[in-house]
Image (cartoon, rainbow, N blue to C red; front, side, top):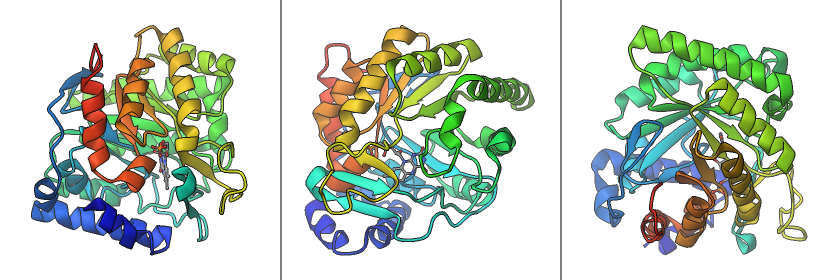
Length: 343
Ligand SMILES: Cc1cc2nc3c(=O)[nH]c(=O)nc-3n(C[C@H](O)[C@H](O)[C@H](O)COP(=O)(O)O)c2cc1C
């Protein structure tokens, strides 16, 4: 059935089709239709960051930026749902066109630029949702906040979303907000992590619950840089790392229509790069904090590869666009088939 829907959706511009899909998934969620129309994945509960996940396959950030279709996505069988990236104030993002499909490569290039309706809208949507499973809220900075003051935006978002999130993701890896990726390195990273951790402690006391903090990193890092990030995360006492966001590389899409568009590349071409980062992180972290792997999962076995590389959970974005909800079940089945599932 998704094949038919995809044929129709792919006739529309990528962004129109994106908006329509969110509307349809949201409406299906409100009517309870999605659960009826999709085969529920096998039950494969896992515990990570002290949270209980229905299964280890989640929705990656950026598809439901405003939290408009939380129930709908959950009903499709995702074991957890990450919404955002949300910024303190609403912002339009980059001029259109800014989203490109490269079907020959099962890839997407986007330079959306954190288009979103702001943290207050997102919170209203979260409060209206009936979903009670694991909900990640991914936070970022406004386009016009200077990168030296980025920490203010992250803290403001953290304060607001804290009571409503199962975990919070700090996005320092979008390539579409100038300067953002510089926060992944050196003193900038350490200062940001320290500020976030201090605020997390204060919020834990205030709300009487500890909400785990994850950091989402880019795939465009050397092994040395990846190891340095891993060490900084352990030192700061972060709860998880999400690897990875989109890549600036154009390997695998050169010569294809839209292959030269600016922005972040996702889908099949980022798979190996992303899995390599997971392996390097896993080697350095040695289980001290869990890894959530995302990037290029377009078949069930790719999800199992990420777990085998050292991840505890996976997320999907582009593969969901190309393969539809069946991919969630396939990914859960492939992970369940591993010798030590969900570890
Ligand atoms: C159109 C689009 C928008 C995205 N927006 C965000 C975002 O707002 N925040 C974020 O952390 N990641 C965002 N991502 C990155 C995805 O969450 C994911 O990390 C990346 O696409 C790699 O996974 P995939 O190959 O399964 O798509 C976006 C990806 C795409 C394709």
